[in-house]
Amino acid sequence: MDPVFVEIGTMVEQPFKASKMSSQLEKALESLIHVFHSYSSKEGDTYKLSKGELKSLLQGELNGFLTASKDPMVVEKIMRDLDANCDGEVDFQEFVVLVAALTVSCNEFFVESMKK
Ligand SMILES: [Ca+2]
Ligand SMILES: [Ca+2]
Image (tube, rainbow, N blue to C red):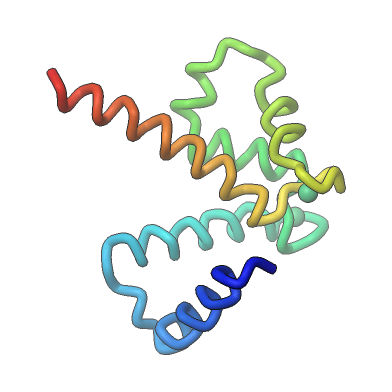
């Protein structure tokens, strides 16, 4: 693993174990984890999203984005894009790529709206 990530691991351990994740961003990270696991634990591997679980997560948590897409294959495409190691499931590390991409896009619209 990249050295900076190893360092982040040690930075996170103490506050996480002490349940001192209390800032707005820390809470956002925590809810990201909780949302992922509430869907990933429904069937098969507890720590990975099957295609069905990914679909429920998208429908339950990102329905606005999902319905904005006119593509009926959108779930399949997202699945294929996210499944970097091609094991047919989306683990947390693969999932955050989607979250990062959505966050970047949302921020672009946010910045745009601030200019007006
Ligand atoms: Ca699962
Ligand atoms: Ca995978």
